[in-house]
Length: 230
Image 1 (cartoon, rainbow, N blue to C red):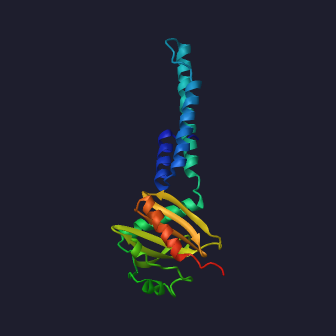
Image 2: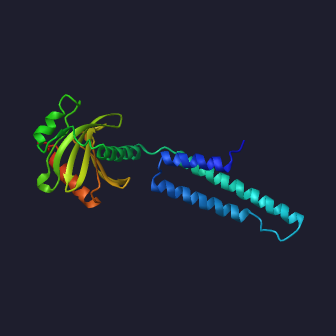
Image 3: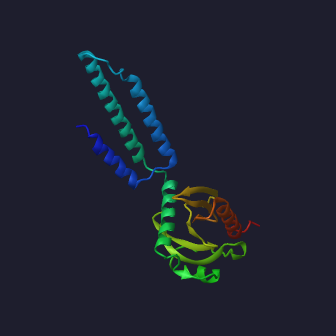
């Protein structure tokens, strides 16, 4: 039994609220809708001037247009339902945890600018030891750390500040020891950086501009790089 257009539209809108599609996906949907509308318009007969036969053709055209619109809505629903890539989903979770930490005013379980206080605090609370460095001299001051939850596990969250800007740095063991160069993206209006180094993967997120977050990422990777093999 066909789903009424208004009910189908409500389903699409509800799904869109729960899952905001990436810009590339939104472009694909828009292109599909434009293509479908163009195909339907080309197939529909011209509006008749008079006569029972012409009126019948007009109604057939209207039915054809409705069927095309329903097909386009169905295609939009399928595209919206397509699962996000794992890294995209993780990036969304990182941005969401950053926002949550700001809203709950729970940035740090241990508030300290001393890396020798923050790093030992994680001992016994995690099954790994996160690298902790202070970049205050470079304009990125360590202000504390806390436990957070990402990728199905408990992770370390290190908190830095640059003027009024907060940077959350999430760190946990990588799936393999392979190093990964930084990849940058934007989620929910925030800048993100993701890389892997020294057996750890890291995500940095902040409302800093893109150039400042790149600078933070470069400095941090230089200070936490494993020593070169002798």
